[in-house]
Length: 478
Image (cartoon, rainbow, N blue to C red; front, side, top):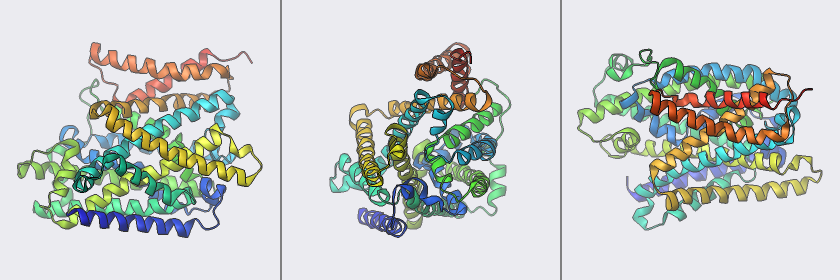
């Protein structure tokens, strides 16, 4: 693709998003921004959540994992099903019963203000680093294939990217995002479908499912080595807890669910979202099998995260493949980033500044708009730190992985609140929630170096358990 074609594609893409923003943000206020006036159709929320769950990192990385991990990722996906069931049957009824805007308000009701602020702060840290990392990867791709050709520096690319997201979210917030995420999810799934069809035709495959089932890369279940990171129960249980924490205890994901008209609609959304997500992940992995075989047959030196972009953008599979890959990549990145920007604004406004306790509606709206701009600048600054001050991609990846540790304390806090009736010394909660991830990292590191045992994604469960036991240590005698 020529740079001019890419520019026209991006302009057309954001033109559609801004049009949707205009149509959905008429007479918008804070309730519209935070909760979409509780008027979102559940089926739109369910479909749009697919795009938010599958970020640009997933779009590129999951197909690339097949070469080294085969289809073992499906073990985790099946674990997601259990986690989403817990969300639909336990967490959503709780959130709707308490009529929450920010889900972390529950922690204040259950434990106190220190627990509340701690939970919200861990989310803000995690989501800021996670969103910045995902946008950093996509901005790097756009810089390489487009902006370098025009001599545009990286910081300008990033600033324009965030500005465009701010432009279509600043007024309608989550109401706009419910609709834009639906469109972006559609683009992403079309991109995967087109790439599968093009490679299938290129390899002259008659039956896709027969080909996948007979492939050496299609093995899903691994019970052989309990110490391995891809061991079934490790992946399955990790998937269940990851779904609970990174969806059910994540303001970004739950904010969409809380825009549904009622609990019943929100639960229907979660049910259908689960089914579609399992199917979509299977096709991502099937695409990975095809990409791996295509690279081997054609002698291409492309591996892991380079595999999908290199083959799709090479032009050998036709202009349509390159076009839809780029469209899917942009959609995957921005469907995650726009909801992150909105959820960060919501959490900071309500959890940290507590604007919901103010009575002047105009003042509340002014504060929210200022926070929205502030969060935009923080995302820009974080991405630029990744690019210019850290630079080492492996170090940045480790920072992103460490951000996952911050969900462990949330798991421990909510588990303690839901499954016990104990009270705790609220002021000591921040200490427990800081110490637990540190001990989790040390235990994980020494188990790997001393015993060759990999916790893998199971560190989340370990982190949550350490937090839970830490909270038991600070229980009160009431």
